[in-house]
Length: 250
Length: 250
DNA sequence: CACGGTATTGACGCGATTCTGACGACGCGC
DNA sequence: GCGCGTCGTCAGAATCGCGTCAATACCGTG
Image 1 (cartoon, each protein chain N blue to C red):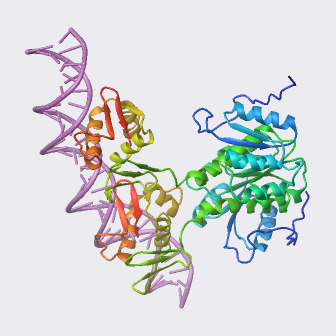
Image 2: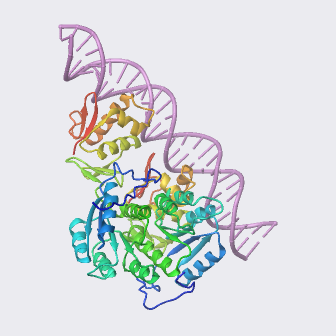
Image 3: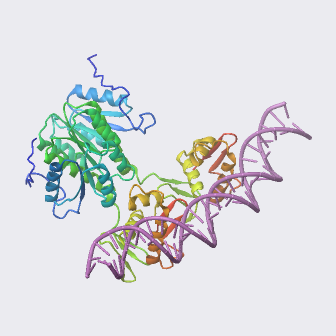
């Protein structure tokens, strides 16, 4: 085994997304130098990114189409294609963030790559910390655009919840909910299918100081059911798990 | 430094937006070194950007709130505030792209700035061409999110809002609105159908420092309704969601 | 300096929302 | 069968938020 690049910088580096409960982020690394690829793959995998690698432009375009990465790290000195061509090939159909790597310091090339559609440009040799930070920035930036106004609709057979617009529609008419009712519904819907403990619900909606006032839950759960369930006495979507908590089922 | 600090309209350089018929892009330059500011302002104005400048962090935050720039160029070595503080102050209420300038090459500082919410990091001395390219990249990136998917004309049964012309027409006659009224209407209309929280409204219209002065909202919502609603006492388009915010419905 | 228009406050009444306690129903273990 | 704990329901009381009005401060213009 060749000498690995141990670039793990200890705890000094803040990593906002935590790395633990972050939704999986897929990275496509495009470089023809094996040692660079290896270093990147090791570092990225260590930080729980899903990593694909491509050694040339053709493979890169193919993998990008097949795997739909969340961000692409692209070296410009590829054997088969000009870097700008790769970028344009990608930009023809996707807005995925592209971070360009290059050994050349020349300003012209930076301008060309950026204007071709790249999002960022890092010159080699680069600090792994910096690249990772730029990668985080690129991913963070694309989050709202990527899925900001989609997948916020949750439907059941009797009503529809729009988390973005904060609207509930039932039989074609909007249902008015009070702030507390909304908050409660939101927490439940965000954990669709999973059990949410009473303590967790109370602390989410009423604040960390509340953990035992289960009567609040009973009152507001009843109001939610009255407003949303077809038969409030026999709820089908807001399920009580006695002694444990509540569960929302679509 | 590779580039001169002179405006070079090089024909070879692709300028996607054309430069002439591009919608006006507002840039906020934050730096305490007058010569840097001057160079940037000259170059940006030559390319038809609208430019504001601030010499320190406090002014920057204030101007950002007042002028709503499309992109911010931020020097880290400000006299009054730490750079990361400025970034966080901005990120508290806006996603405007931030390009950080700094004389320090240190990787730590780059990581810190990027993780605080910056979009890009350029070290001084920098090539003007490169900075402009990164600026174009930042603006291009934010276009779809910024105002890509919203209509310029919004119609209701009693009035029409033209966001581009900044005009409201009711019963064939234009309605006069004060700047604050416009700003409020604009924010609401840009989120047509969606609920906008009072905090968000306050921070968008009055600035990031305002988050609790809900009486402002009450006063100006009343004025909007009086000017635009058929029956101000029973609004059909400017809906109050008690305890949560307001919603514009067509 | 006076003036008109605009923005910022403060005060008040009313309706809606939240809190709270009481009661009965149900399931479960003994 | 009985006691116990948990849940659902209800209604009154306390609180909060909103719309409204009016007074004051601000600011550029003539």
